[in-house]
Amino acid sequence: LPSEALAQLIADEWAAQGERIDAPNMPATRLCFVALDRMAETREATAAEVVKYASTDLLCFRAPEPAELIAAQSAAWDPLLAWARDELGIALVASTGLLPVDQDAVALTVLHGRARDLDPIRLTALAHATALCGSAVLGFALLEQRVEAEQAFALSTIDEHFQLSQWGEDQEALERLARLKTELVSVGKVLAAL
Image (cartoon, rainbow, N blue to C red; front, side, top):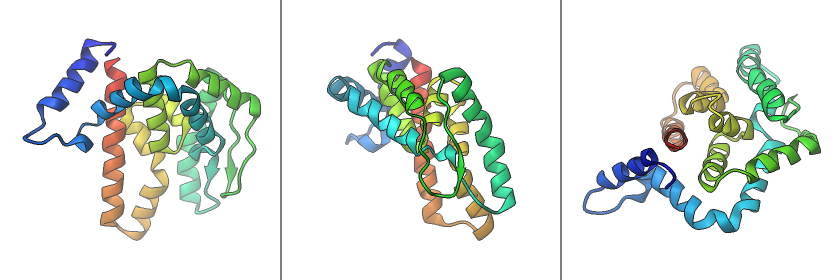
């Protein structure tokens, strides 16, 4: 592993194991195994998967109503899209509704190059964060320390939390959100340990 801090993070996960190894409760270990064992042969495909998420990035699909949700999405996501444009050179277009948006091919090519050029652990972390958030912008924001993991989780679940506030808590939805948050926080810890 590239740093003592990351090695300690992995060692702590192993030390927490009981009589049996519980891989689902070892997210940093799993991420590093994928990075070290698979990334050499899947680098291009992984970078392409990040680009695929960017072409349908969560931050680009805005609710048509109600006004409170529209305002929450705009306040949370517009600054990140501006950051991606200014800092990463990736200008993505937001729209209302669920119809596909044709994103700029140049922006997607830039994004592909940025992803492909990462070291194996950072690329694996980016791909995992992107999938967890449904957003390449949020994945890169976490990677570049523009946001922390818990903030990335909150930004990626604005819609879900709005629905929970409107319709009440759903235990299954809350459990799913808790799992996503745990995974994303682990990705953040791996990145911080680098």
